[in-house]
Image (cartoon, rainbow, N blue to C red; front, side):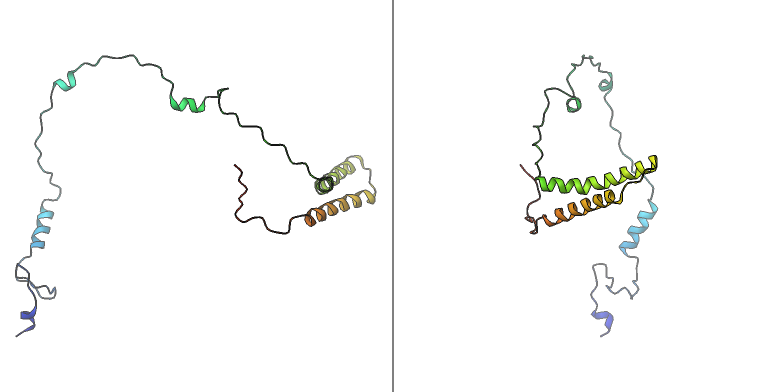
Length: 162
């Protein structure tokens, strides 16, 4: 008994082993040959007759009614539209915090104004003025840092209010 006798064969009698040459043309080769021969051919379709009266019907023209377009309403600025409620008033800071913010924001602005005035007029200011502005900036900055909350904010609070 040979190895060839042990191999299963399909319905055409061809062996499953690709290394063994087949004796006749396989059905796959015939199918590919038919596809290649008919490549580009279009199938013939029967043409159905079109009813002539379909295109000859006359349509009465009806005047359209001017209805407002839904998209136009979206862009129209009505006085009756949505008016948001007035915003809540700004919170009032404590006097110490207000003074610290004036020192942090006002001192650099005052130094820039003094530099411009010095360049335009030629008048020089005392070093006490510049030193006082620098001290106001540093004192305000240190106060704001010292009064910052040390514990972290609630991690689940995203700041949204309903």
